Length: 126
Length: 412
Image (tube, rainbow over all chains, first blue to last red; front, side):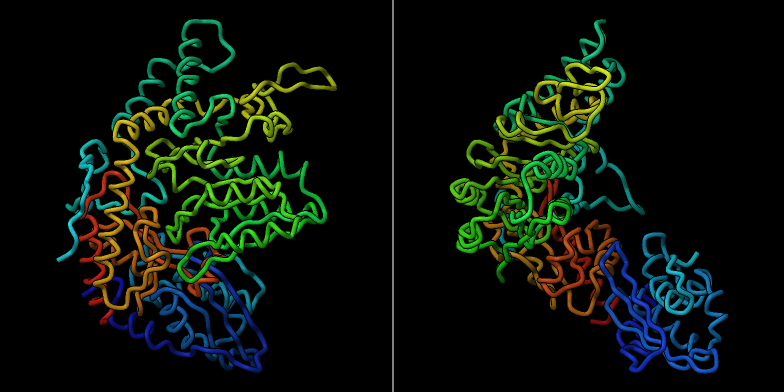
């Protein structure tokens, strides 16, 4: 079996969960990967300090789309305070595949957009 | 049956990097559009210069310094002659980006103002786009774009219409597009530009390594290219300019080596080309690039062009076998340089490059520093395979095999 392109990664790539836009929404983020021109935006609806609902949109490779899809399921219901504490390790572990240095930004683009939307901190997750 | 490749230069053995193995596999390098590999002769020449002839140039009276001087000057003469230029109008820069910035700063800031326009094209690399965008913003001038048609080509009629508006002071465009592969009709374009009283700047980064370039025949006012794509080292680019323009231009960077004399409050500039070469120049790099152009001249640039054209024709033919693969740019190899950008339905270009890598094949994926062009092609990114003198048909076969295997990984 392929190390990187596992069945569930390709499944999320082809049929991403929570893909699309959410109107109205309370928070939004939009990030680009300067390396490849990929674009990823998120819309978030907030209720009682938690993420009530979330959608992501844009275009990207299998790694970035699968990351966003997998993370979206975890993020729903999460307290906003906790979203600010999510780091790169959380995302890579959740993704469950070995991510090379060159593909790291693909995997982290979604988290960057989500954290930016929630905390205003647009830095790459470390 | 795929078409027979009519010419193969068979010079892979001259390039030591191809002795390397990656996971036991040969290196299949199809990314020469990003940077070329280096022949042993270039590597040796640069090392020998550093080992035996190293001194700073234009300053020393001792024998070693004179050796460095003469090596540097000889390199400039060879590099100028390679494209039909003159040494005094052949300026060494860091790369083609710096060559274009030099013109944008030195000529642009003195000659572009409100009401003027700079015309570039939709197919430009960011290196030939951002400097003009910054200049036009600063000088309240207009930046306009010549459109790329559905074949990936420019229209001479559209150029004529733009020039007829009367406000265009400079037209900047690529000789060969780094994304589409399109070879632009430089001589026809510069003739129209000159007739309209405007200047032309040509980005030759993708052209000089793979086809005969004769500056006299092309007729551009400025022509820039870069060493590392032409079998030479990184860190050296070249700007050729028309002498009377360069004479009138103020320097770009200032400091040592580019002055005739300095007083406390005033300075006079050195003669061409040194006026535009502030500080210690890329000496060993110039020596290396000099040997690179010797190497290309010995192969013969007509032969190099034939080789790259036939490999490109073969690549277009073989890529056509991959289901869902779409090539961007002109369909005929005669109208293209040695590169092909493409997309594969159902696989993002980044994943295409990753899957090619599993077959040992190096290709590039991304926006190729041409985001406005990507938008007008309606894609976020493409994969790009580009050939050099050392490639052969088997390299293309390996790419096609890797793409077919990649489609299976993706369940296509």
